[in-house]
Amino acid sequence: MIYVLLSANVVIVLGVVLSFRTLPPVVPLLYSRPAGELQLVDWWLIIMVPVVMNLLYVLNNFLIKKIFSGSEFARKIIQYTNLVIILLLTVVFIKVITLVS
Image 1 (tube, one colour):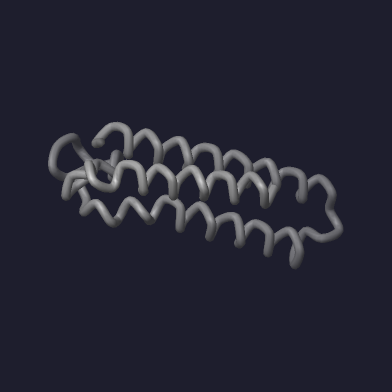
Image 2: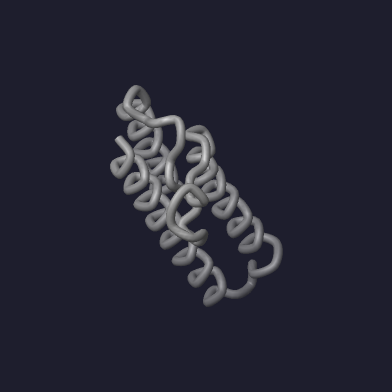
């Protein structure tokens, strides 16, 4: 699972590096807000997506080791949750970058 996380981080870093020159000063990130300027944030806040992804991965692994160490079922559920989180947040990041670049 760590290889999936590292691969997602590499994809995100490549996305930032390749599109850094074309990023506008604000990007749409807060899709839960009404359409328009309320969805826009400064470009550097897009980094919150991979930070949250990595923090959730670490938190879930902590839960596996400390709380659910004896439960194979809970461990599998949390591992699949990690996989879904990594894939979805990577796709969201790439979609936002490609949308504004």
